[in-house]
Length: 404
Image (cartoon, rainbow, N blue to C red; front, side, top):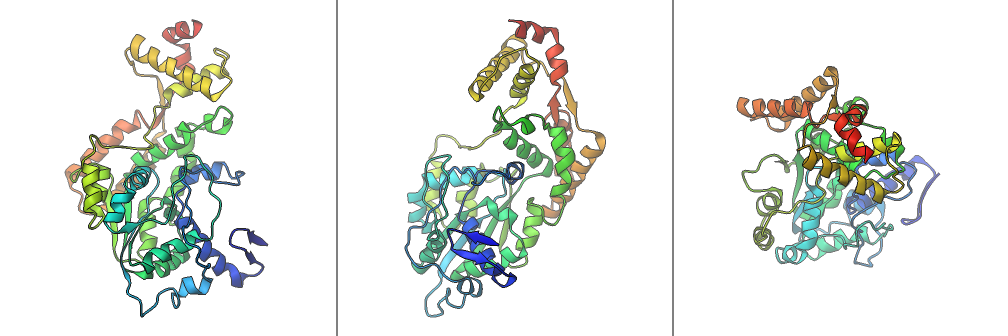
């Protein structure tokens, strides 16, 4: 038995499942959750999703039926001209999505001048969003006013084939539909995914503190090498079943500027005012950047060893900063002792990386592939490793530090 209080629909038999899927997919489409899907797997007990923005519809139109959305028979009026452009940015997670979303919030007026509207209303960071049936209609309202649609929703990386069909029907209100999805090299993306999970650790998150990148890689690498994966090549493969115009943007390509300029000046069509606003910034902005978690790992290890007393997240941050200062100033940033991934896991990561690169960027040159391999070798001995807390805490220079 399934009940969704917001939409007021029940699931008592399979015949109503399409109704639920349609509404849930579209509901997810217009939400921008900041919680990574892997974090969701580790925190399944949570009843809400933490988000940096809250999406809410601005129209009080009645909620359409499932048949109206899925078939498009009523949703698309043949006597009404179609709006011109629907630009859907599908993420994926950890490819600059937060930056694009935050800049679309900052430059909402410029986007409107360029003809783009977005079916959301920004709220304060870390707010929790209630389900609002009106938000499903806000996109339709944009189409009825012949305005371009812009949606940035990394949740689309979770979409399945049925969801792709439903999304296609929904976007039939626009003449031109473009799906934009970013590609980031697998090993680099995987490191970023782990960093995202780890940098948000609370002092009570025992499982996260005890899950190193080695543990994480050994248990999760294979998940991303599957047809249901939320990694770019597999998402593109699913989207291709219904959409012809899919732009795969290379996260690493800076030939057309940094990510913010590249997206709003080159990928988004006819966004002159927004592009000018982006280019007028004194510096390129980047949201949700990676953090060095070595220092917090050492702080937590020292706590577990009884070397320091840490009772709150604030204590943890403060002591991690002391460790960082000591490392940089007193030890001149001397390399930490590290424990790295076993060779068979590294080989699996490299194989996925190389296969994905050839899949997404078939014109890659031998030089580019050689440079990618060199970057991978560096990461294999640094970012794909964990700081060896036990050996580090046993080092005389650190024994003296903790003794004080």
